[in-house]
Length: 316
Image (cartoon, rainbow, N blue to C red):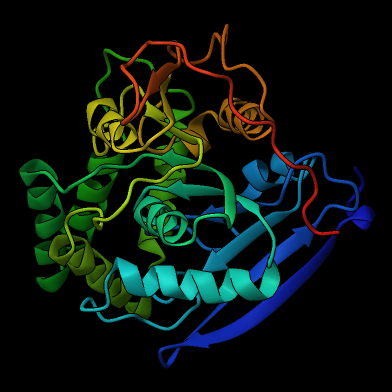
């Protein structure tokens, strides 16, 4: 696939009075349905880098800066996950009015989960990377501490605390590309503008005020939940709890990675996602722990019927 074979389309939008935008990079001959990426607190629509490039070898890729993300308008904390899911729905209704595959990472996992739950039939499959069903007291304390550090102007302490929340710095364990990831994250945090700080504060307060996944019917489509085995934020145990809430879910943890698995092991996470979205077996993968079949309709580790075959393309 050459760069000239791809075409990009950007759509500016307004939802509830807040401006935001999204984009799609079209693959002319995709083998699977378009992949929607809904990122975390420090992710922006054009910053998926290597992960996006590898996904583009198989599918069109859709990214979005929801209100509160990237260059979009700051979103006050009282607007919850349901509001963000509504903004995502408006965007996808315009740019992809056909079934898609969805990836929700970190902060974006709750938004992706809620959009899929509220829109049955719009998504083929859902992957959640670094997620939790509810905010634990331990995580709440860490988030509240970062807000206090910002309010008193302790930026260096804020940077160190955020990194310690996302990155496993325990020297006894192996985390791929850890020094590079820490350096890149440090640079990004040190470049936060006043607007970026305001967005972090509002997004963090939203997390504190809306501490659980919205209720309602379970997601019925096939779901993959994963994170790094050393994730100190959305630990494997917390992530696995989310898979148990879904009707048909699979869970695994990637080796030698933490919360920032997409930066530490991009090749491996892309391989896992494409296998899942493409309906391929998730067995015998040396980069992750054995994939468990978890969900509301079965016991962990019990084999069930194969996933339904995915549709290809979707744009034509």
